[in-house]
Each structure stands twice: as C-alpha cells, then as structure tokens.
Image (cartoon, rainbow, N blue to C red; front, side):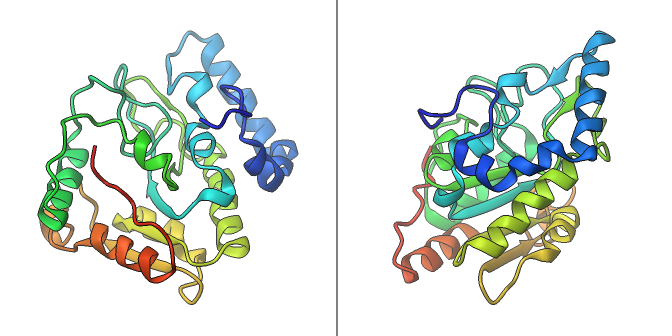
Length: 228
C-alpha cells in the first residue's frame, strides 16, 4: 500500500481520477445498501479497509497491466481486494491453481504455494474485480448494485489517460467489461477463463504471461516478475 493512503480510503492518484464518482447517485445508493447489509448482521468480504486494496497497491500512474476479475471470493479469509488473489496461508482456489500452472508452463517458474498476489500489484498489475464486495457464502450477491459502474469508470480512465497498458480479459464477462478499451493504444489479451470449467478450452497454452513481458520490454518497461 502506498504510504499516503490510509486503509479503507482511495489512493490519492485514483481519488483525483474517480473522486467525483462518490458523489453520484449510484454510489450513494451503493453505500446505503452496504450499510443496510451490515446492519442486518450480514458478513461482507473483503473487510472494509481492504475494499479498495487493488487501487491502493497500484496507483493510477503506476498501472502497467490490468487483470479483470468478476467478484471477490466469498469464503472466510479469502478475499483481500485483489482479483484472483487470496490471503496468505489460505488454500488456493481452482482458478488460481490453473493460473499458476500456466505460468509454470509458460515461464518455467515454480510457484511457492502462496496465493497472495500482492507482489504483482506492487509491480503495477491492477488486480481489479468488477464488483468490490460480496456477502459470505453468496457468490455474486453484490452484483448490479453500482460497483460495476465504478469499476467501468476506472477502466475508462485508464483507457483514456494512459497508453501502452496490457489488459488481460479472461472469460466472456471480462471481455464484455473490456469492450471500451482502445486496441490501438493498448494490448488486449483475451482467452477463456482459468476456471476448471473452461481452462482447457483455450486458457492453457496461451502464454499470456510471457506475452505481457514481451510487450512491456518492447515499450521500454521492466517486465513483471511473476514469481511468488
């Protein structure tokens, strides 16, 4: 986390880009919904201070790669505000296992077993879920409440104000969400989702991690160290 962002608050670099969104009716409605859920005794993930974790680990001007997920993991101790990532010492979810398998096949890297992707975020990989909260044991429970509009605004800002980013769109949901990205300004990598239901239909063998690093290197940037 950047030193000037307090837990639970939006990093100043993102606040400058997205701050106006918090005053819009949809965000006011979302805030009221979350307050009602908490008042009703429902457990919400990730914990409040980690909701904007992706933004706080990867400031707007430091973003180099964007990996779009759908909504947070809904099991205890899993979600911490980074798409596909789980907190340390938590069992790896199936999709993340397949991501690590592809990294090993692509780059010859053997992962340590930790599913905490924070080191990626700190190198400029924005691990962005479309929906930033979820109810315990209720997948997709906070969809269509406003988060998608907020994260669309983040993607639109990156598309408009930055150049030479890599957008990684796994599965039809992420690909629809990425429809606003200009392929003339950015590299867009698409494949099936790494879920066990679809990984064998074209996620494995795409070598997207080496392709990301080749693109970054070609644009004068340091490649991502994917090793965990």
